[in-house]
Image 1 (cartoon, rainbow, N blue to C red):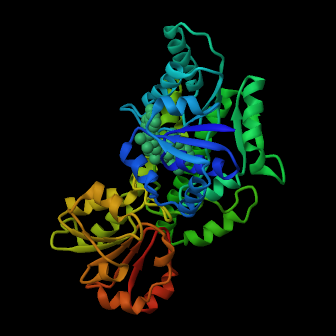
Image 2 (image 1 turned 135 degrees about the vertical axis):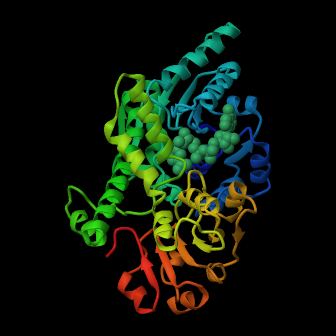
Image 3 (image 1 turned 120 degrees about the horizontal axis):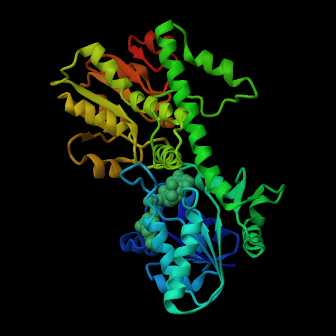
Length: 438
Ligand SMILES: NC(=O)c1ccc[n+]([C@@H]2O[C@H](COP(=O)([O-])OP(=O)(O)OC[C@H]3O[C@@H](n4cnc5c(N)ncnc54)[C@H](O)[C@@H]3O)[C@@H](O)[C@H]2O)c1
């Protein structure tokens, strides 16, 4: 099938490469010419495990191309996936300007039937706006061409995006005409050989499903963070509590890890956008209001622990931060809790030495040279007054605690991701505090 993917970011590039892997003829469009030049030169603009291999092999096979040429991209695909960003607008609602610009381009330049698929995370009602935008452009040209609009929200996780796309838990297709449903089912058929995971539904339900999924995951995290904070007050250990409730099949273990707050390009903006959708419809989502405010507070937890240890004035103190990306296996720094913590440390007069296995370049974009970037995790500790762990990278999980202790000026670890057994760390003569642990 001839497919165009509009927007070659985390979602678009993975979608394009994975669809090409199954034999489709894919063109990926982006307006960012630096990104497209890099891809054309064989580079990959983001860190995503396995993506480089699959992009390279499909480019070599002639099934995957990159362009900034809108006319070429509209011409190419019978199916046009819109995978552009939907960042938060000032009021928290999703800003649809990129989605609607992509839709208008299609209307302006199409010459035959297209299935236009919203893969970006978009509020309920967006497909109707996309339809209107295309129809307006066609009317302005005075041409009559058929097209379908479908919703196909993406559930991939950064850090495991290729794997998730290739082996999806479910494929949600929101479509209301048979032609679009048929095309979408054909595209996803090879991704679900052992059993059908397609959920076909009306477009509005598909749009809402994506927000409800992210909101539920964020809710679990904030819930566990509150339980962890209470556990600290009560002298209970949230790790025992986590296992005690996760073993209930009605609850399950996923997304029950307390920590120093969730971040990333999806949960914060999607929770806000869903709240805003509710407000526009005369409702308050009380649970989500709490989820967001708990998360804002949780991003301050490590700072508060430091202040209660060293006092409010942290000038002259130096802190080592392990982990900058919002989660492991990605270089994505959007809404990363590390940024909030580091800004607060700097504002309290401290200096920061940070290490992340892949996100240092991205971090520099956000923080510039206001902090020091260490060449490895151990170097970061030299003379530091504490080690703060913000991202649970595998390589932080079994450090040599003797070396950690020797390097630190103050032998203190504040662990925002509960990586270690407190008793084991303390055996090495380190002070250790985590989230909700005894
Ligand atoms: N990142 C994730 O983990 C994830 C997961 C599921 C869903 N989503 C959703 O997918 C969408 C894309 O997210 P992302 O993380 O890939 O964003 P991104 O910022 O990495 O990529 C978006 C790309 O779209 C390009 N773009 C913008 N307008 C364009 C236009 N008119 N034509 C062509 N290209 C254009 C930008 O230059 C950018 O490269 C968002 O709605 C997001 O919420 C993201």
